[in-house]
Length: 255
Length: 232
Picture 1 (cartoon, chains in turn cyan, red):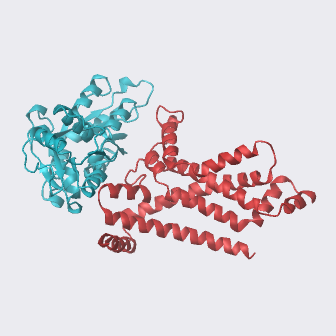
Picture 2 (spheres, one colour):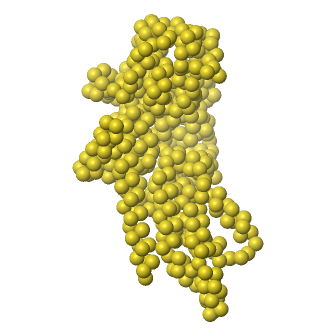
Picture 3 (cartoon, chains in turn blue, green):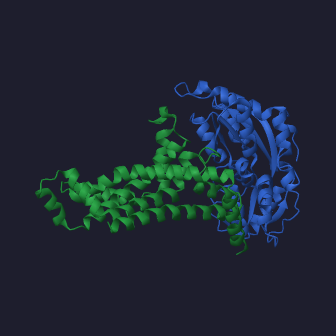
């Protein structure tokens, strides 16, 4: 059974807890491939994975509309935060609006690091820029790292730049970073994860492990798993990294 | 500097305590790279000998191909092997993607040209009269190759140890074809990549030290063998 998922779930360590649990309970042998959301969806839409766990609602809706998946289940959320150097050259610390902070960074030509790897975080960041009507591509202050969240945080930190991070990865690395949280808890910064089994009907010539994919999706929204997700990180970081959301209405989520 | 020291201490603690997770990663690293090197030697050494001894046309082309192969970027090999092994790929029916076997295949591809190329250049340094004399005395070509390899054994062992060095140090291809799955395909180099991306720099350094130690032990063994061969 092949699970294609995002780097944030692996970098935070959540999968190292959930996948062995799933394998033990159901006797599965899960192969987890951690790539960006873009690549995970691409693997799924080629029939190279049996289930995907990703966080890019817009791209997911399109992926489902193309007939790649059997269902799309809300699993959990955490939130994105804008982090930056304590000197805060753009003056955005404590700003309640992410959109406003983005504008200030562009106006002040403060260094910004973008992952530019088509991951969920990257797609989310690009959406925010286009929502404020700015095209930062090619600007000298707009640095692209092309790497996952962990290395990108280190890079932004070393370059005294701002960046967008999911809270889980930031908390996991906080002790090694000088960078601090600048903007948080703004509604548009919600980071929502869905699980989607790959549809065997779309790939008649490929042996999709549909039972395994479905079992994983069911596992992710099961009460005990949801409990584990809600507890994950409490012991190490003093606060949970994800909020379990199975069965909730996506529109009703709050930060 | 603190970090280096911390890594060093953590690395030694990990080794001394015989951490089971680490042992698993180390033994898989060794299994994959030694298997890949053994196959690379079995194919590469005779191939190199043939290359050094033959005089057929097209020899130059093969030599150039092998020389290029010695600098083959592992990520390109990883990409090619991944696409071959995809469910939709030509070898997809084997279900080998994300297994140690796939990593052995990828490491074999990067190590083979080194074993062949360095063997060829080692044998090229021998006195050409030796091959001629063997042929005059009625030896068949495989026998000539065998004697030549024996004559250059210390250098051939260096070729094999260079191939091993390439295999164990390689990360790009193993990451792609193996998937870096905990307990299944996580080896030292891919584990280092992962813990670095998680920001656990001390643990990364610790693993790096283990990797270096491992490479040293295997190479020391081979070098010892090469020196013994020199004084036969």
